[in-house]
Amino acid sequence: MLNRQPSNRYRLPQSRKLNQWNRDRPQERAALLAKKRQLEISLQQASLPIASPVKPNFELQSLALQQVKLGLTPSKVNVTPPTLNFIDPQLQQVFEADKLAEVNRLKQEQAKQQQEAKKQQIEIETALARLEEAKAQYQSSVTSYQQSVERQRLELTSLRTQLAEVDSQLKGLGEV
Image (cartoon, rainbow, N blue to C red; front, side):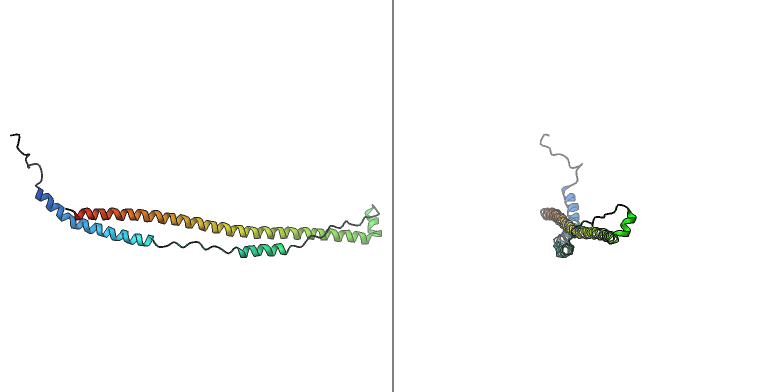
């Protein structure tokens, strides 16, 4: 009685398990082959090169800056206004009209020079801002390119891993 084998009453017969397994294999194999084709297509698409950013020509912005710098007019030497002999403004207008006209002309010229200097300063700052903006845009495109390359590398690694998994499953189906 000890040598007695367990009854098969509660288990499926081996032949029945094998038939069910053999029926499911072609469907499973077809599904794995379809998945493999999809992964290979995705791998080919992901392997396409990413366009690298074109290095911009900063010459345009540099030339604009140089033109602004070359266009700078040197401010004239401040000439001291002539001294007036009379303290009373009415007497100055009568006896020193030419000196008063010279003082007014010098004040207007000085105001004009200050306006021109402010305008040139704004032009310089604008040209510098354009140059900095072009550099920042280039740096942004380089960063974006590097992120795209990294994302592509990770995607390729993932697809290769999935493809290897599918290949090993297909090999497992081939073994009986």
